[in-house]
Amino acid sequence: MQHAAMKAAVYSGVNTVETVLCEVPVPHEGETLIRVEAAGICGTDMAIFAGKHPRAKAPLIMGHEIGGVVERIVGEAPKGVKTGSRVTFFPLISCGECFTCKTGKTYVCENLRLIGIDRDGGMAEYMVVPTDSVVPVPGHWPRNRAALMEPVAVAVHAVRRSSLSIGDTVLALGAGIIGNLCAQTAKAAGARLVAIADMVPSRLKLAAEAGLVTINLAEEDFNARVRELTEGVGFDVTMECSGSAGAQPLATAATRVLGEILVVGMPKEPPPVDLRMVTFKELTLVGTRVYEKIDFVRAADLVEEGKIAVDNLATHEFPVDRVKEAFDVMARAGDSLKVLITF
Image (cartoon, rainbow, N blue to C red; front, side):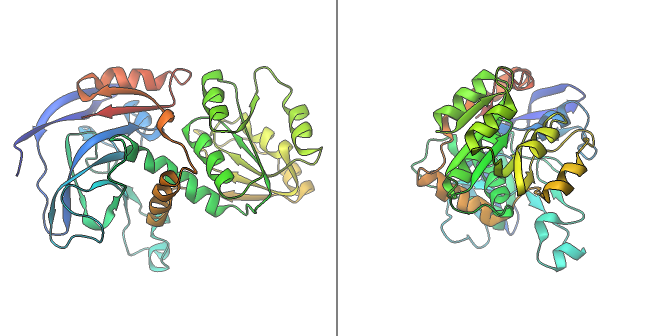
């Protein structure tokens, strides 16, 4: 059944997002129509909203973190997916022609594009995606949980990029949703001690609820806590998840000799890094960008197995008619972790 009109959250100009009535997209061969149940607002969406994303152009339906139900598949259905299946989707669009694509690493395509940034995304009642990008999730899940799989996939990929071994000690700098999920994923991967540092009490409370050791940067002596937790050695792996310039010296200070710093957060400006400390300690710096499709599959498995908890990370939900309010709440970092728009 094809629907004539739908509500969508549309970025229409700098600091302007509106609920608009527009046509339901029509799927063609090799495409799937998804009825969206929830869409997450992420930092990239906030950059688009502020008019600071170099590629996103108004008018645009934002959103690359979604959960929904398959409405219609045109062509062959992928394994485990049928009409009515609960799903999320893999939002990357690769060119297939550049060096990294030809060597099989399409997720770091030199011309990488994303659904929800370079073309209309999922902050709408319906969206169309390539069928091979559909990722099934358990049908018994709460309706909003699938919308959190994209940030979990970021964390799964980040930990896979690291040299984390069973029994290691891990520090996550930044207790936003990516920091929280990276820390939980490190714990699921076998770290014996996982600490997370931030200065926002509400975020540290959610981290503590997930079984993580917390460090309040506004109230505690950071270096003293690092020594206490690691018996003076430093952490085996430090994950910088905040993207804050002020976190870089904390990362080099907290990591042990011959340890590793995993750069997960995306700084708005190139931050100062103490390369002398990197040299003296022979630290390894590892970058991580997005994810591969397998990371979505593993993310769903880890959540289904109870190894990563996500439901309490969605701190706010707003119906699509209140999308401007949703973005205003997301802009106040101390008040929210993940804001969902529901349909």
